[in-house]
Picture (cartoon, rainbow over the protein chains, first blue to last red):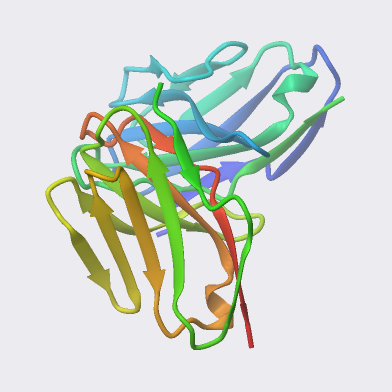
Length: 113
Length: 113
């Protein structure tokens, strides 16, 4: 199993450009998550999807949209990138429920100029 | 709001010694507390989970304690090895369904040979 995969690994955008970060998992997990990790801020939840067809806002959803395309895939879209969205983005998944830990992808490093 | 504090300074120890990392939290009592390891350029990897009614959990050289009175968890690595060098994150699961975790900033551990 590949686990959780993310594309791209790195991306440089100019302010105002749009892009979609892709995430896929092959563990048949119900729940998927998008986090951003910034120095001094820790991991913060952007959006999560408890199951196929549902999405919910996390702590920092502004400026982002998500799509749970199917059970395997959960994408994060930046419609108009801003320098404040420079960060490392992690996708995670789990079965959901007590004691079901989250499995993380390798991350996407995004720089917005 | 929930606040988590981990050792802010990096921890340097000698190989073979026991490393002890601290996670303190305020306000609410979490249903679960998790510890993850993160290596540079990679996503977090789950290590241990402890429930609010458990005092201690062990896995090989790892031990986690959970004191809900002190609002503190301690993470121990015994017989430490240079390969244990990484950043260790604690995460609180407030509502017990592992969907919205609150993360600490992490403690950087360096084990010197």
